Image 1 (cartoon, rainbow, N blue to C red):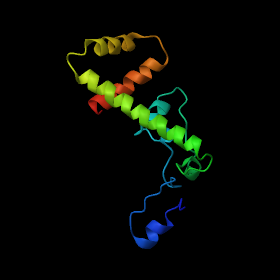
Image 2: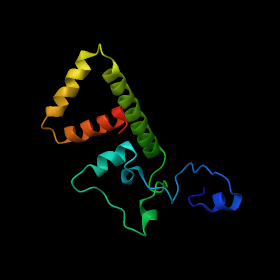
Image 3: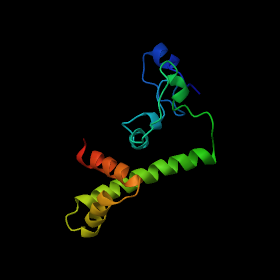
Image 4: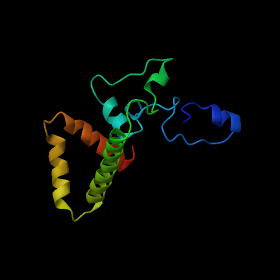
Length: 126
């Protein structure tokens, strides 16, 4: 396993880090990911201590086996659900989804504003 970039630099090649890398932030700290977008939308978003970025990396160190499978399935299911939701929102005949989407906009649920911002961000690519 290689969590750093030594091989990349040594071979001057792109190395794929199957178990993460110390120089790539974990999704929670990256606003360009779904988890990061939601995390950064919180009143107190998670922060990275400058100079200690490696402590917030995506290198897999604290879990294996069933936990890795659970995380992988969660991400996969989330992506599939968002793709389905966007496809339904794009379908002009799917009145039910559009109605539910409009209800979410006015909902008092604390997750609703975050979900709406996320969907608008993904849907309109802004």
